[in-house]
Image (cartoon, rainbow, N blue to C red; front, side, top):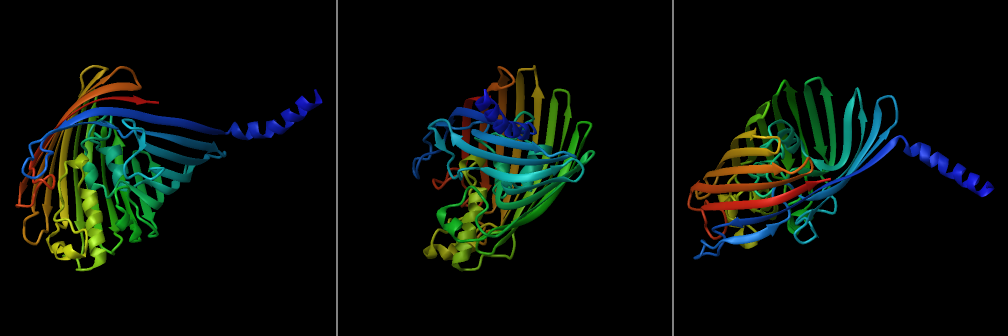
Length: 393
């Protein structure tokens, strides 16, 4: 009996302390089959590709949220989130062990301060204020808007967010001690520093949301890029409509002919290209000293307008459609100056609050200079069909 009482006394303080804390496991498992055309090599671009992808509507992930209520309206908060691909069980391509890893303090009156790897303010603003779809901020398999968000996440970040009534504001600063995005190759990551600074302001009340944000990024070789976005959305019953505009602009004119500029051109190209945002290429690749002269022909500015609509036909069926128009400029020869047109339509069927199936069709078309294409094979159009199943826990 004495041993039982002693054990109880040892455990009791721990139990009392934990009573003020909560640890929540959450996640999404999303797998889809996707077919796209014009995926062949040069001379045979008409070949199609069918593949299973680990995320058609959402990136698959699991995470842990931690909250400790310390009283007087003050909480300690933390998050760890890992991305994976359920088609093969692997960690997400290009992802670190944790896509998010931050800790912070949240006050009921003073706002929230978080420290670590987390979403940047451009991503926060768009997904919370004028996201492409009301039931999922964007479609993972086809998300041209994310190509304008400067990598979506930043390392080494301090972020402060405060909310007063219908208004919310946020500021971020990330320290220049390492790369800040998920999509860099080893060369760019080893090249050194990123620094970011920016913020946003949004308003949301009575079904109307609107906001604007700005982010300045210094790439590893010293190139500065300005990015900003503005947009609005309206929700009334089953109807959802949204409008948005974004700009990415490399400052300082043409790239200097040096190694740092080669790295920076690759970093910015990684932001702007990729199959999930249509494969719209930023300009001639410059991957080594032999290609240094090609730096002069890289585009230095993109802007994108987006408009979308969603409608919930029944409690289980959602329809959504979106159009994006992107303009690219700054190529010295004009070969990479032109436009990209992105179209996507999705129907989503909810079996329950946690499980849904979806069917999406997307199309990308580029026009303009002779170098404007969706891939190295020179394709100027591409159509994709995606069918998938998603579960949230």
